[in-house]
Each structure stands twice: as structure tokens, then as C-alpha cells.
Amino acid sequence: MNIKPWKELSYEQLKVKVYENKVDLGRAAASLAAQSIGATLSRRERVNLVFSTGASQFQFVDGLKEQDIDWSKIAAFHLDEYEGIDKAHPASFRLWLRTRIEEPFKPSVFYYIVGDAPDAEAECRRYAQLLEENPIDLGFIGIGENGHVAFNDPPVADFADPVKIKIVELDEACRRQQVGEGWFPSINDVPRRALTLTVPAIMECK
Image (cartoon, rainbow, N blue to C red; front, side, top):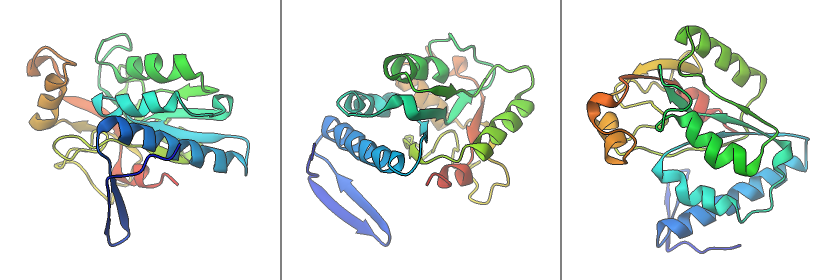
């Protein structure tokens, strides 16, 4: 499937494609993802993917349903999770990923960040080790309204972060976005902290 962009731009090494609507954008991104996965599987037996969640990903996930991808050879990871939130909570990213990625596509394994682990720092270390052992081939990364990538809000985003995953304080703009998208009834219900892959960990996606 070849969906042509409405406009193409370049900023130094960054190439940007602009599509007429979010459906075309999602389908084009999914097609590109399938090509990248296929190319990687031609060289080895497994592909490691990391998934974003939230409203920005709906059309992309719909586009994945149109692709010929061997999900039995895919290991899935995810970017971030609220601290202290149960996996069955309606706003849990684990629930989002389980219902929209794991159950319909059935990857060989899905490694979740356990937001309500008894020891959040230990959970960060556990997940960092998983990332060390399983370098990510391809990342599907959304950008939040305040510029956040995963839960790296501008005040805590660090391009020289020494760790792969950390606990962060969420800024008000980020928390208000979660309310605006309908995940929580009010800002007082949005957790104040989260576990997130850091900027260097995301930039390590091949």
C-alpha cells in the first residue's frame, strides 16, 4: 500500500511527511512499519518492538490490521506506565496494550512495565535489564501536546540520562491532556508520577 503524503519536508537529517488526514497518516505509518519488520525478519528470527498508547495511536493500530506481519516472531515492549495504577484500570497503558495489541495480534511475548509493582525503583531496574538484553528494533512513538515523548515531559527530559527507565513527576500540561482525552474524570484523578523509558533509551531504537 502506497499512500502518498500531501507534503514532504526536510530539516537537516530529519525527513517529515505530512498527510491529508490522520487515517492516511496511520495507514502509511503501519505500511512503513510492516516493511521495516519484514526487512529485519529477513536477517534474523525475532523483532523487538516498543509501542506507544493513547489517542494518537488509534489510526496506526487500525493500519496494522491491514498489514501482513508475522506476529509470532515479534516481542513487544511498552514505553511507560503510571505509578501505582492497576493493570485493569481503564486508563492503564497495560490494559490499552493488552486489548489493542496483544489480544488481536498475538505477538510471541509482551513485556509490560508493572506500574503497581511493590518497589517502583526495582521495577525500573528489572525493565532496564530486559531492554539491555533485547535491543529495540523499531519504536512507535507518539508526541504529547506539551512535547512529551513517553512520559518525558519537558522538565524531566534528559538527552544524557544515565538510565534506560526512570520514575518521573508528570507536569500539569501532561496530566490535563489525559483528562482532555477522556482517560480520567478530573486532573485530581491523574497519577502524579509514572515510570518511563528515558530519551536515550528511546533514541536507541534502531
